[in-house]
Image (cartoon, rainbow, N blue to C red; front, side, top):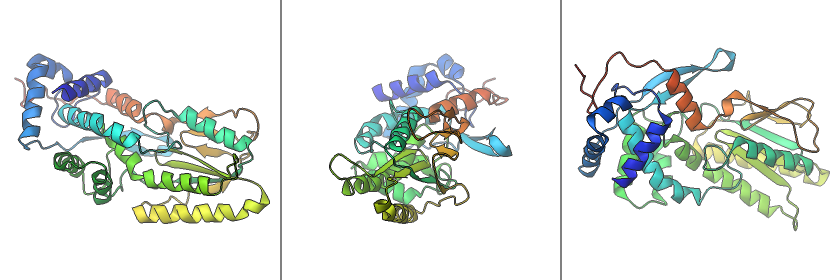
Length: 318
């Protein structure tokens, strides 16, 4: 109950619109938070808990495109939040230093600093990778297998499978409380491969590969010296092999090899075309690089409420 209570407090702090059941925080508070959490706890213990399909909301993006945000019901946000509180410390211990997106005490600014330092160190051959519809195409079976390697708990795996299947046969919904953690876990092996490449090619204190990943945006920087020409092709080949193994598609239209004097799309940032590969790089915060929880909270605040009010159990209020 303590974990559920903490998860509820976090969900309430983020506020947000109701899910498909129309239940609001005001309705839950009126009913009684303790009663609401006890009902969830009973369903979890008896294995009768079934998550509701998330409410889908389109959020405008640049170029006339939209981001489809999934808004879980508050009860499901609480369960996801509780599971995240349990799992996050386990997987954070496995995540690599080059991963910055949606992680505790890590920001897009730190990813930019890492890349700027690499450019100053003459790592100026850059592989800029964008993944096509990444969040929509995560394979559930592979994701659950990754969780099972570290978590030997049938109840946790059962609950996680329910959460994933509630919104389709593959993918992790953008807007789900636990989705950022799961999306990082799915790509963790890519980060480990890059760390191995970085250490394998190290010469004393000098490294010839650096990288920064912010969710589904990845930048890899290779040393510019001619004797390291082979590294560019070797790293790109291994990246493609890793993504193929995960059945994650590279967006060839947005992915490219770039020079720092050209516009470089970084995880959540964009270097201007006149940036110099020395000193602290000037950069502009790009709209797509908001923290996942901030994106979800802001979007939910903009979503109009459903035309009905319900109690915590999902029953309409007269």
